[in-house]
Length: 405
Image (cartoon, rainbow, N blue to C red; front, side, top):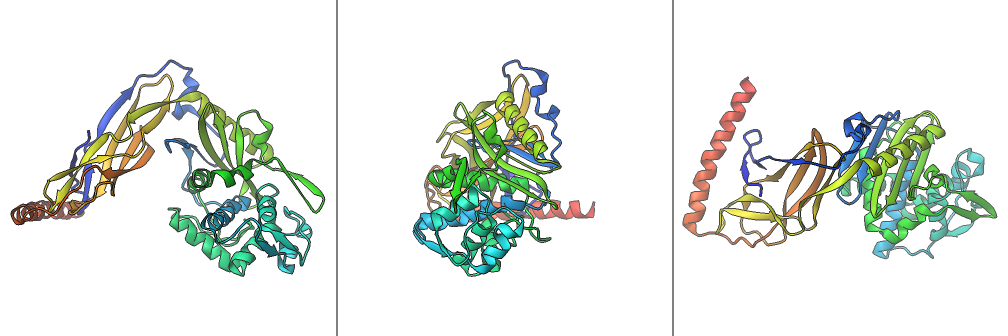
């Protein structure tokens, strides 16, 4: 169990003591080592869906143009509208002249070939968006939901912030080039994982291999479907500014991995590097369970309560994937802003558990109060106030000393 201690580097933060785990795993070839893997993709990330463990990353926080991978956010907004009941699959949106000219066959980009001034069911527009990567479908959806592309793009960015994507900015629903439209591969992986977990039935559209509209049959552009690796999504992208990119997901033996690459020079390179990352991830790692569901992970200090500390638990098992055949240092810490103030209700999220594999943050999971904490007596609160005053003074003094140094 991890106990909290004062963190002198941040006036109101407490950080748990770091513990070390050394995982002795099965022997495997040296190329399984995470630090030995190489990819030609300028930006890339590989994530285990269950544990959220980052298995590999390269420039994962660099802002890049998403191209048609932006359509994943377009799809998420539609999925959210369907889940809330504000839209149905039978809702019809019109194909405006703008959608037809800017996103149709004559635009030179990918299109579902919807006819101008016709109405199309949302279910068909979604398949046109996801399977065929239709820019006309994306624009029709944007106009149908928000009136204009600009309005919808603002909604895309707002929704990204709601989902914790703090860096990504969207300027259109299609992925057409715009200097201000930027994402990171890390945030694209988070968006993909959110869709997979939140809309499992709707996510299946990403795995459909073909769709026919207006008597034109088109195959899904995802190159991973050509390989026998369990791929079932998500989306490719290419414009000159971005190079070739892909958000992909595959499942093998019950384990799902999500891969994102961007900036590759050719479609062949995109397919090869994406597959290489997935093959390596499935082969090179195994899961190590750190804590069981409901097991006490650590303690947080409480201010003004009828008890001085609070046990913290995770609502799901905490696992980390580590390289086979390696003894790698795994460290974990509980992070929260505190001390926590009473009263606190059992089941309230109050902290996070951060797990590092070597120098890489592998897992971050929320932690919850395992007990109710009531407001303490007057004497208990007075003692807590005195202790907080003295430790707060020490933290401020130490911080001031650091600034002078």
